[in-house]
Amino acid sequence: MSLEKIRNLTQLISIRWRITVLFVVVFGTTLVLFAVFIFNFLASTLQHEFDDALFNYTVDVNESISLDARGDLSFQTPALDKGKLYPFALGTALIQIRHTNGEILSRVGDFGALNLPYHHEIDKLNKGEEAVFRTITKLEGLPNKEAEAYRMVTLPIDNSPIPQLLLQVAVPMTLLEDQIEHRKRIMEISLPLALLISIIGGYLLSIRAFHPITEMIATTEAISAQKLSARLPVPSVKDEVQALALALNEMLARIERAFQSQERFIADASHQLLTPLTIMRGEIEAALRHQDNGQNVLNSNLQEVEHLSKIVQQLLLLARVEAGHGALQFSPLALDEVVLEAVVRARRAAEKKNIRIQFNIQNSTEADSRPEVMGDSDLLQNLVFNLLENAVKYSPRDEIVKVNLHWQKECQNLQVEDNGPGIPENQLSLVFERFHRAQPGGDGYGLGLAIAKKISDAHDAKLTVKNNYMNSLDKTTISGCTFSLEMKNI
Image (tube, rainbow, N blue to C red; front, side):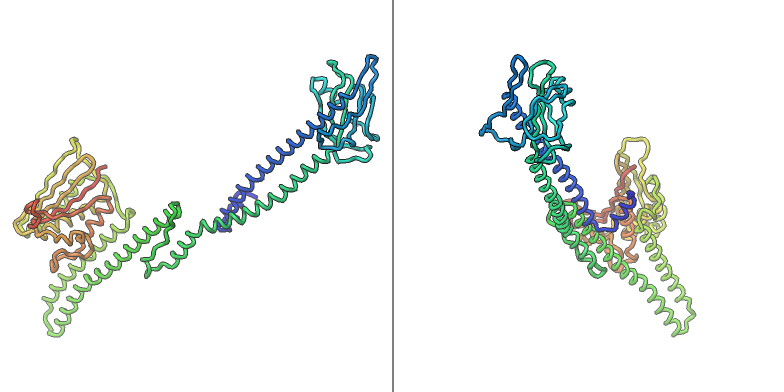
């Protein structure tokens, strides 16, 4: 099965089962490898203990063999030592003495037609090994065999450099086979049982681990536009699930604020657009009833149409800013040039009130070249123009609006200062809200500063406002306010 088919198959099952399967695969593989290692280690240990016992018995047999000076061989079965325990029955042992040429000199036990191998053993003994062990499974010709396999040990009788006489002892491996088979059956039963327990345990653990996410899903499905105040349950354990719940709750809070803002915006915009339309309708109906020539009505309607056009232009500009960075055209630009263009635009309104706009630049960068910022030139010009228009609107006649641009090493700070009535302290936090007017009954639509704030946020800039006081110690008499815009240099 290709990896693509495996990937498609895994996509058909839930992540809960995928995690369970992954847990079982990792745990099962580790368990099987560990079990195989333990089984081989135990089998090797049992085999080693069996060989040690067989070797000790063969040594006892070897000590009972005597060889006189004429080369006559005498052999007696060793007496049973009750202090020694062997993993085989002594009565079933096959013992023989043979010459390296293959001649069998003496035997104890019922060999029948069985011929024990010896050529490989001679090669090993000639190389200096003390004893050679072999497992014999081909037992054709052996009558009354006690096991499916016999363990044989071969060691030299004489002490010559090249042995001539060999002692071979073969015993059934019944007890060793039973011990190994018993351990094998234990593993054959315990391994599947352990894997089954791991599957059940892994699935239960995955259910418990995904319980907070299940609750989050149920809560999320119940959230609607009418229930945006609902929040997801946050687990008490500080882990990734808690971080996800907190992030989703923050997102829901932002969505709720956005919905509330849009609802207020629609309500306020409807009111602002309905007012001039109501005026126009009333004047037209009055003209029709009195059969006027309509000149005054047309002039009044033209004025209201201009108001509607300004509102629509500002709403479109606000929508463009709120559309995000995709609708903006950022490029490096000099902020002082943007400010100068905005000053030229605002000068016409200032001249109607005989207000002078004073623009100053203060350089603290200690550099020859002027710093630049990254931004949308048109939007930044609208931002500065809205600040200037607001300052001119609330400044008395024959006053000065100060515009100060402070170049700094890492940022630029623009300040627009007027000498108007200022802003009540309880409304300072509301001046950037849509359709909010600090001075009730004044002209304007309450969109200029809201647009300025949105443009500032879109440029990652900081726009703030504060009142100016006649006496810095006694903050009772307000003498205008100052709007500050701080933008980072590039």
